[in-house]
Length: 353
Image: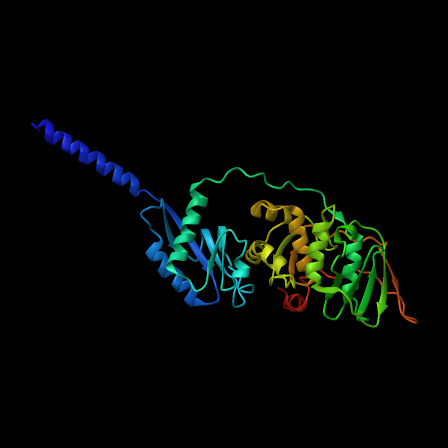
Protein backbone atom coordinates (compact mmCIF):
# COMPACT_ATOMS: atom_id res chain seq x y z
CA UNK A 1 0.00 0.00 0.00
CA UNK A 2 1.10 3.51 -0.70
CA UNK A 3 2.09 5.63 2.23
CA UNK A 4 0.01 8.67 3.04
CA UNK A 5 2.96 10.93 2.24
CA UNK A 6 3.52 9.39 -1.22
CA UNK A 7 -0.20 9.49 -1.94
CA UNK A 8 -0.31 13.19 -1.11
CA UNK A 9 2.65 13.82 -3.40
CA UNK A 10 1.01 11.95 -6.28
CA UNK A 11 -2.28 13.76 -5.76
CA UNK A 12 -0.47 17.08 -5.66
CA UNK A 13 1.45 16.27 -8.84
CA UNK A 14 -1.74 15.11 -10.52
CA UNK A 15 -3.55 18.33 -9.69
CA UNK A 16 -0.56 20.31 -10.89
CA UNK A 17 -0.45 18.36 -14.15
CA UNK A 18 -4.18 18.89 -14.63
CA UNK A 19 -3.78 22.61 -14.08
CA UNK A 20 -0.91 22.70 -16.59
CA UNK A 21 -3.00 20.83 -19.17
CA UNK A 22 -5.89 23.21 -18.59
CA UNK A 23 -3.60 26.21 -19.12
CA UNK A 24 -2.38 24.70 -22.39
CA UNK A 25 -5.84 24.74 -23.93
CA UNK A 26 -5.78 27.83 -26.14
CA UNK A 27 -8.01 29.24 -28.81
CA UNK A 28 -6.77 28.86 -32.38
CA UNK A 29 -6.77 32.24 -34.13
CA UNK A 30 -5.93 32.86 -37.78
CA UNK A 31 -4.56 36.02 -39.39
CA UNK A 32 -3.92 36.79 -43.08
CA UNK A 33 -2.37 39.56 -45.13
CA UNK A 34 -3.22 41.36 -48.37
CA UNK A 35 -0.17 42.99 -49.91
CA UNK A 36 1.37 43.34 -53.34
CA UNK A 37 4.80 42.97 -51.71
CA UNK A 38 5.63 39.28 -51.02
CA UNK A 39 8.37 40.27 -48.57
CA UNK A 40 5.79 41.88 -46.30
CA UNK A 41 3.76 38.67 -46.21
CA UNK A 42 6.86 36.55 -45.57
CA UNK A 43 8.01 38.86 -42.78
CA UNK A 44 4.60 38.74 -41.10
CA UNK A 45 4.60 34.92 -41.32
CA UNK A 46 8.04 34.79 -39.76
CA UNK A 47 7.13 37.11 -36.90
CA UNK A 48 3.92 35.18 -36.24
CA UNK A 49 5.86 31.91 -36.00
CA UNK A 50 7.86 33.52 -33.20
CA UNK A 51 5.24 35.59 -31.38
CA UNK A 52 2.03 33.79 -32.30
CA UNK A 53 2.02 31.51 -29.22
CA UNK A 54 2.81 33.59 -26.14
CA UNK A 55 2.80 32.23 -22.60
CA UNK A 56 0.61 35.06 -21.33
CA UNK A 57 -2.00 34.65 -24.06
CA UNK A 58 -5.02 32.38 -24.29
CA UNK A 59 -4.79 32.40 -28.10
CA UNK A 60 -2.45 30.85 -30.63
CA UNK A 61 -2.11 32.97 -33.77
CA UNK A 62 -1.14 31.34 -37.06
CA UNK A 63 -1.04 32.59 -40.64
CA UNK A 64 -3.37 31.62 -43.50
CA UNK A 65 -4.20 33.13 -46.86
CA UNK A 66 -7.57 31.47 -47.37
CA UNK A 67 -10.79 30.64 -45.60
CA UNK A 68 -12.26 32.50 -42.67
CA UNK A 69 -9.78 34.72 -40.84
CA UNK A 70 -10.06 36.25 -37.41
CA UNK A 71 -8.06 39.23 -38.70
CA UNK A 72 -6.63 40.38 -42.03
CA UNK A 73 -3.74 42.83 -42.46
CA UNK A 74 -4.40 45.23 -45.35
CA UNK A 75 -1.36 46.88 -46.92
CA UNK A 76 -2.40 50.42 -47.89
CA UNK A 77 0.89 51.21 -49.64
CA UNK A 78 2.13 50.44 -53.15
CA UNK A 79 -1.27 50.43 -54.85
CA UNK A 80 -2.94 48.06 -52.38
CA UNK A 81 -6.26 49.73 -53.17
CA UNK A 82 -6.15 47.78 -56.44
CA UNK A 83 -4.98 44.52 -54.83
CA UNK A 84 -8.24 43.19 -53.48
CA UNK A 85 -8.19 40.34 -50.92
CA UNK A 86 -10.24 38.05 -53.14
CA UNK A 87 -12.08 35.43 -51.15
CA UNK A 88 -10.62 36.37 -47.76
CA UNK A 89 -13.29 36.60 -45.11
CA UNK A 90 -12.29 38.26 -41.86
CA UNK A 91 -13.80 39.66 -38.67
CA UNK A 92 -11.20 42.39 -38.06
CA UNK A 93 -9.16 44.54 -40.42
CA UNK A 94 -5.63 45.68 -39.52
CA UNK A 95 -4.28 48.67 -41.47
CA UNK A 96 -0.59 48.46 -42.48
CA UNK A 97 1.35 51.38 -43.96
CA UNK A 98 4.53 53.44 -43.77
CA UNK A 99 2.39 56.56 -43.51
CA UNK A 100 1.45 57.29 -39.91
CA UNK A 101 -1.27 59.68 -41.12
CA UNK A 102 -3.09 56.75 -42.74
CA UNK A 103 -2.82 54.68 -39.57
CA UNK A 104 -4.04 57.49 -37.34
CA UNK A 105 -7.42 56.71 -35.82
CA UNK A 106 -7.36 53.03 -36.87
CA UNK A 107 -8.36 50.58 -34.15
CA UNK A 108 -5.76 48.03 -35.27
CA UNK A 109 -2.65 48.93 -37.25
CA UNK A 110 0.93 47.96 -38.10
CA UNK A 111 3.60 50.46 -39.05
CA UNK A 112 6.27 49.53 -41.57
CA UNK A 113 8.93 48.29 -41.35
CA UNK A 114 7.40 45.46 -39.35
CA UNK A 115 9.09 44.76 -36.02
CA UNK A 116 8.53 41.93 -33.57
CA UNK A 117 7.45 44.23 -30.73
CA UNK A 118 4.84 45.86 -32.98
CA UNK A 119 3.42 42.47 -33.95
CA UNK A 120 3.34 41.41 -30.29
CA UNK A 121 1.51 44.62 -29.38
CA UNK A 122 -0.99 44.00 -32.19
CA UNK A 123 -1.62 40.44 -30.98
CA UNK A 124 -2.17 41.74 -27.46
CA UNK A 125 -4.81 44.16 -28.75
CA UNK A 126 -6.43 41.42 -30.82
CA UNK A 127 -6.44 39.12 -27.79
CA UNK A 128 -8.25 41.78 -25.78
CA UNK A 129 -10.74 42.27 -28.60
CA UNK A 130 -11.63 38.58 -28.94
CA UNK A 131 -11.24 37.51 -25.29
CA UNK A 132 -13.42 40.32 -23.97
CA UNK A 133 -16.39 38.81 -25.77
CA UNK A 134 -18.03 41.34 -28.02
CA UNK A 135 -20.76 43.19 -26.23
CA UNK A 136 -24.11 43.17 -28.03
CA UNK A 137 -24.11 46.10 -30.42
CA UNK A 138 -27.25 47.73 -31.72
CA UNK A 139 -27.04 47.13 -35.44
CA UNK A 140 -28.38 49.75 -37.85
CA UNK A 141 -31.97 49.19 -38.92
CA UNK A 142 -32.99 49.48 -42.58
CA UNK A 143 -34.56 52.84 -43.37
CA UNK A 144 -36.34 54.28 -46.36
CA UNK A 145 -34.29 55.95 -49.05
CA UNK A 146 -35.28 59.35 -50.37
CA UNK A 147 -34.32 60.70 -53.78
CA UNK A 148 -32.40 63.97 -53.75
CA UNK A 149 -33.10 65.64 -57.09
CA UNK A 150 -30.55 68.35 -56.33
CA UNK A 151 -27.79 65.74 -56.03
CA UNK A 152 -28.94 64.06 -59.25
CA UNK A 153 -28.89 67.38 -61.07
CA UNK A 154 -25.31 68.04 -59.94
CA UNK A 155 -24.33 64.56 -61.13
CA UNK A 156 -25.82 65.30 -64.55
CA UNK A 157 -23.87 68.56 -64.71
CA UNK A 158 -20.60 66.79 -63.92
CA UNK A 159 -21.28 64.44 -66.84
CA UNK A 160 -21.91 67.16 -69.38
CA UNK A 161 -19.88 66.87 -72.57
CA UNK A 162 -19.90 70.58 -73.37
CA UNK A 163 -18.57 73.52 -71.40
CA UNK A 164 -15.81 73.60 -68.81
CA UNK A 165 -16.63 75.76 -65.79
CA UNK A 166 -20.02 76.07 -64.11
CA UNK A 167 -21.30 78.29 -61.32
CA UNK A 168 -23.87 76.69 -59.01
CA UNK A 169 -25.89 79.37 -57.25
CA UNK A 170 -27.65 77.93 -54.20
CA UNK A 171 -28.88 81.31 -53.01
CA UNK A 172 -27.10 81.21 -49.64
CA UNK A 173 -23.78 80.39 -51.29
CA UNK A 174 -22.19 79.48 -54.59
CA UNK A 175 -19.87 76.75 -55.81
CA UNK A 176 -17.88 76.21 -58.98
CA UNK A 177 -17.49 72.99 -60.95
CA UNK A 178 -14.59 72.16 -63.26
CA UNK A 179 -16.10 69.52 -65.53
CA UNK A 180 -12.77 68.54 -67.05
CA UNK A 181 -10.96 67.82 -63.78
CA UNK A 182 -14.13 66.73 -61.94
CA UNK A 183 -13.38 69.11 -59.07
CA UNK A 184 -15.72 71.25 -57.00
CA UNK A 185 -14.54 74.61 -55.64
CA UNK A 186 -16.12 75.75 -52.37
CA UNK A 187 -15.60 78.72 -50.11
CA UNK A 188 -13.96 77.99 -46.76
CA UNK A 189 -17.22 78.63 -44.90
CA UNK A 190 -19.49 76.91 -47.43
CA UNK A 191 -22.76 76.05 -45.59
CA UNK A 192 -22.99 72.44 -46.76
CA UNK A 193 -25.65 71.50 -44.22
CA UNK A 194 -27.90 74.32 -45.48
CA UNK A 195 -27.28 73.52 -49.14
CA UNK A 196 -27.98 69.82 -48.54
CA UNK A 197 -31.38 70.78 -47.21
CA UNK A 198 -32.76 70.67 -50.74
CA UNK A 199 -34.46 73.13 -53.04
CA UNK A 200 -33.79 74.66 -56.43
CA UNK A 201 -30.56 76.23 -57.62
CA UNK A 202 -29.38 78.02 -60.73
CA UNK A 203 -26.47 77.07 -62.98
CA UNK A 204 -24.50 79.34 -65.27
CA UNK A 205 -21.51 78.71 -67.49
CA UNK A 206 -18.51 80.90 -66.72
CA UNK A 207 -15.25 81.51 -68.54
CA UNK A 208 -13.07 80.66 -65.55
CA UNK A 209 -13.17 80.17 -61.81
CA UNK A 210 -12.53 83.60 -60.30
CA UNK A 211 -9.62 83.92 -57.88
CA UNK A 212 -10.66 83.98 -54.26
CA UNK A 213 -11.01 81.95 -51.11
CA UNK A 214 -11.97 78.65 -52.74
CA UNK A 215 -10.95 75.14 -51.71
CA UNK A 216 -10.76 72.47 -54.42
CA UNK A 217 -12.20 69.07 -53.53
CA UNK A 218 -12.96 66.09 -55.72
CA UNK A 219 -16.46 65.25 -56.87
CA UNK A 220 -16.21 62.20 -54.59
CA UNK A 221 -15.48 64.45 -51.59
CA UNK A 222 -18.46 66.65 -52.42
CA UNK A 223 -20.94 63.79 -52.92
CA UNK A 224 -19.77 62.04 -49.75
CA UNK A 225 -20.00 65.13 -47.54
CA UNK A 226 -23.23 66.37 -49.15
CA UNK A 227 -24.95 63.02 -48.52
CA UNK A 228 -23.78 62.96 -44.91
CA UNK A 229 -24.97 66.52 -44.33
CA UNK A 230 -28.46 65.85 -45.74
CA UNK A 231 -31.28 65.30 -43.24
CA UNK A 232 -32.62 62.31 -45.19
CA UNK A 233 -30.67 59.33 -46.49
CA UNK A 234 -30.34 59.65 -50.27
CA UNK A 235 -28.92 57.77 -53.23
CA UNK A 236 -28.28 59.06 -56.71
CA UNK A 237 -30.43 57.66 -59.49
CA UNK A 238 -29.21 54.26 -60.63
CA UNK A 239 -28.55 53.00 -57.08
CA UNK A 240 -31.01 51.24 -54.80
CA UNK A 241 -31.23 49.46 -51.46
CA UNK A 242 -31.83 46.10 -53.17
CA UNK A 243 -28.70 46.18 -55.36
CA UNK A 244 -25.37 44.61 -54.46
CA UNK A 245 -22.25 46.76 -54.70
CA UNK A 246 -18.55 46.17 -55.25
CA UNK A 247 -15.74 48.61 -56.11
CA UNK A 248 -13.14 48.02 -58.81
CA UNK A 249 -10.80 50.58 -57.21
CA UNK A 250 -10.82 52.75 -54.11
CA UNK A 251 -12.36 56.22 -54.59
CA UNK A 252 -9.85 59.04 -54.88
CA UNK A 253 -10.52 61.75 -52.31
CA UNK A 254 -8.58 65.01 -52.17
CA UNK A 255 -9.37 65.45 -48.49
CA UNK A 256 -7.15 63.14 -46.45
CA UNK A 257 -9.71 63.13 -43.64
CA UNK A 258 -12.21 61.39 -45.92
CA UNK A 259 -9.60 58.88 -47.13
CA UNK A 260 -8.71 57.87 -43.57
CA UNK A 261 -12.32 57.77 -42.40
CA UNK A 262 -13.34 55.41 -45.21
CA UNK A 263 -10.47 52.91 -45.19
CA UNK A 264 -12.57 50.20 -43.57
CA UNK A 265 -15.52 50.74 -45.93
CA UNK A 266 -13.24 50.75 -48.99
CA UNK A 267 -11.58 47.52 -47.85
CA UNK A 268 -14.99 45.94 -47.27
CA UNK A 269 -16.42 46.68 -50.73
CA UNK A 270 -13.12 45.82 -52.46
CA UNK A 271 -13.31 42.21 -51.29
CA UNK A 272 -17.01 41.38 -51.43
CA UNK A 273 -20.39 42.23 -52.88
CA UNK A 274 -22.98 43.49 -50.45
CA UNK A 275 -26.20 45.43 -50.17
CA UNK A 276 -26.35 48.71 -48.26
CA UNK A 277 -28.10 47.19 -45.27
CA UNK A 278 -25.73 44.20 -45.13
CA UNK A 279 -22.68 46.49 -45.24
CA UNK A 280 -24.07 48.73 -42.50
CA UNK A 281 -24.69 45.71 -40.27
CA UNK A 282 -21.32 44.07 -40.97
CA UNK A 283 -19.36 47.29 -40.41
CA UNK A 284 -21.60 48.59 -37.62
CA UNK A 285 -21.86 52.02 -39.22
CA UNK A 286 -24.84 54.14 -40.17
CA UNK A 287 -26.69 53.45 -43.39
CA UNK A 288 -26.31 57.09 -44.42
CA UNK A 289 -22.50 56.77 -44.32
CA UNK A 290 -22.65 53.72 -46.58
CA UNK A 291 -24.91 55.61 -49.00
CA UNK A 292 -22.58 58.60 -48.93
CA UNK A 293 -19.64 56.35 -49.76
CA UNK A 294 -21.48 54.63 -52.63
CA UNK A 295 -22.52 58.01 -54.08
CA UNK A 296 -18.86 59.06 -53.99
CA UNK A 297 -17.65 55.88 -55.69
CA UNK A 298 -20.45 56.13 -58.27
CA UNK A 299 -19.60 59.67 -59.34
CA UNK A 300 -16.02 58.53 -60.09
CA UNK A 301 -17.19 55.51 -62.08
CA UNK A 302 -15.63 53.02 -59.66
CA UNK A 303 -18.79 51.32 -58.45
CA UNK A 304 -19.90 47.93 -59.77
CA UNK A 305 -23.66 47.56 -59.44
CA UNK A 306 -25.60 44.30 -59.57
CA UNK A 307 -29.22 45.33 -59.37
CA UNK A 308 -31.80 42.82 -58.15
CA UNK A 309 -34.61 45.12 -59.24
CA UNK A 310 -34.97 47.74 -61.92
CA UNK A 311 -33.38 51.04 -60.82
CA UNK A 312 -35.72 53.83 -59.82
CA UNK A 313 -36.46 56.03 -62.81
CA UNK A 314 -35.38 59.62 -62.71
CA UNK A 315 -38.00 62.22 -62.02
CA UNK A 316 -38.86 64.19 -65.17
CA UNK A 317 -38.68 67.43 -63.22
CA UNK A 318 -35.22 68.97 -62.97
CA UNK A 319 -34.10 70.70 -59.83
CA UNK A 320 -31.70 73.03 -61.60
CA UNK A 321 -32.45 75.70 -64.17
CA UNK A 322 -29.45 76.00 -66.48
CA UNK A 323 -28.56 79.45 -67.75
CA UNK A 324 -26.67 78.76 -71.01
CA UNK A 325 -24.38 80.96 -73.02
CA UNK A 326 -25.93 82.84 -75.89
CA UNK A 327 -26.96 80.56 -78.74
CA UNK A 328 -26.51 77.38 -76.71
CA UNK A 329 -29.45 75.23 -75.69
CA UNK A 330 -29.80 74.16 -72.09
CA UNK A 331 -28.21 70.82 -71.32
CA UNK A 332 -30.75 68.07 -70.82
CA UNK A 333 -30.68 66.27 -67.52
CA UNK A 334 -30.06 62.54 -67.43
CA UNK A 335 -29.43 59.95 -64.80
CA UNK A 336 -26.24 58.69 -66.45
CA UNK A 337 -25.34 55.03 -66.93
CA UNK A 338 -24.64 52.66 -64.11
CA UNK A 339 -20.97 52.98 -63.25
CA UNK A 340 -20.21 49.36 -64.11
CA UNK A 341 -21.07 49.93 -67.81
CA UNK A 342 -17.82 51.67 -68.69
CA UNK A 343 -15.10 50.65 -71.11
CA UNK A 344 -14.61 47.28 -69.45
CA UNK A 345 -18.36 46.78 -69.16
CA UNK A 346 -18.82 47.31 -72.90
CA UNK A 347 -16.00 44.87 -73.66
CA UNK A 348 -17.62 42.30 -71.38
CA UNK A 349 -20.96 42.77 -73.15
CA UNK A 350 -19.37 42.28 -76.57
CA UNK A 351 -17.65 39.12 -75.35
CA UNK A 352 -20.91 37.86 -73.85
CA UNK A 353 -19.52 37.78 -70.31
